[in-house]
Length: 570
Ligand code: SRM
Ligand code: SF4
Image 1 (cartoon, protein in one colour):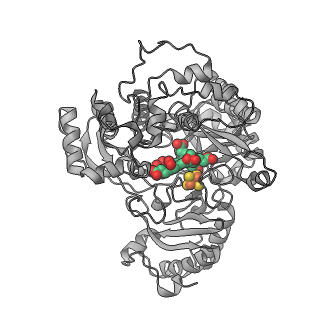
Image 2: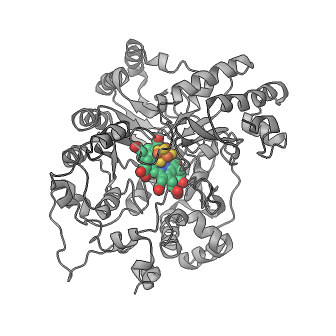
Image 3: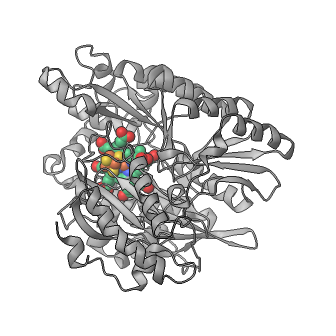
């Protein structure tokens, strides 16, 4: 038995059922191909296949707006699929953009969604369209391998690698990490791209050297950041790599481990946690360090309880000192002491910005990352003319990158013609804020998020204006459930859905993303949210120090997350 199978010395039936699905899947094949052919249902009939599908980047969902009606008519749920692409470092070409736009219309719901981890999602894809969609994605050299599932996911890095040499090298490392940690199975190519299986039969088992038959206990996420920008929310990740540079030269990376947002309301065994910096490594050591951390999580992560299976719990169960000792033992070298660094920003610059090499970049705010309608048409026209790249940000925005001086007037004209500059004329608070997808597609949503965001922000902006904070950047993030896909526990004001129209209110994360927020009020409606925010913002407007952010102000005044008595009464 290899080390990676150690936890499977326990009978599989004592572990979470997903462990059996993975183990018996013939390296992520299961019976997905057969399920796709089944014309009786619009879903995948096997629960195991639904789980395995995630490793291929797709989720079975349903249109939840139709749930009630279909139940009454005794129809099966309106099954549809979400497809998430793997796009390490978040950069695509205009050619890829145009193809994805076309595919979204042909096979999806006619929209594209930029995610909080710098990639594209398609929604509303019917089962019969998954395969042609993935083949269309493949035509422009993109894929969705390991975009979801119990593996290393899309590796993210600061938006726009073309800003400086250190950004470019960090982005390249994101690509290398993503490739290095990809599952080796050919299942994706066989199922979606009609590839033939290379090694047939039990006598020639396909090797999965890092992941083994049961892959990881849970998802694993990596982010890389170049200070002072923390637009990736580095401390929300299982593994964070903080670039350390000197005079424009990349020296190496501080290594942070054990970040994660997900938790379950009322279950104190689950919690958001910040990553901890455990040392420094050289650029050429990064792949080895990352692979070894993944391997430790593979061997020690909890395979019984998925709610406690992320690396953050492995660290808290065994201790960080144990983790570092185990890591260095496996590496055969010691990490160097952490180097000083400082994050100051998490938001994306909008408008024109010139890079080190003199080329121009244009940052465009996108409302909750949703590309649709007139915006989609406008971006299509620009992609037809643009010769640089399109960079996706972890705040769900985008940047047109690498525009030569002589091309700038042409792009400027197009931006003007399509009113896209107007799109950037928003308050700093709105620009800094976003929401997760939630209803109607997300299986786990308990309340609206993306669809609620415009209305919430309108009222929030009115409140800010009324207390003299119209031009202030305050980071608001709304998630439709406690899983925290919008990273609300790192927002200055975070909402997490509890029930339709009801949210938990979290306050007080730091501007730079190095301190979590605290739960302020539970299960409250919009009226109570604004009743709670108003006095706090009034006080902030009157008492803050120059340049002090709202979250940092709350921390300074010694606020410990306990609401005043009047805020907590109905
Ligand atoms: Fe997420 C599950 C959407 C970023 C924590 N997330 C989901 C699912 C797949 C729902 C499901 O399992 O059935 C959502 C799909 C809804 C839909 O219809 O699109 C979903 N997550 C998203 C996206 C699209 C939100 C967005 O508005 O952009 C983000 C896609 C990222 C990507 O491109 O890979 C997204 N999810 C995140 C983040 C933020 C991050 O990673 O920086 C988190 C918090 C960080 C973390 O992982 O701890 C996050 N998503 C979760 C969790 C809780 C995980 C946990 O450890 O407990 C779940 C639920 C689960 O895994 O069981 C989840
Ligand atoms: Fe769905 Fe919850 Fe994630 Fe929002 S936070 S996308 S509601 S799982």
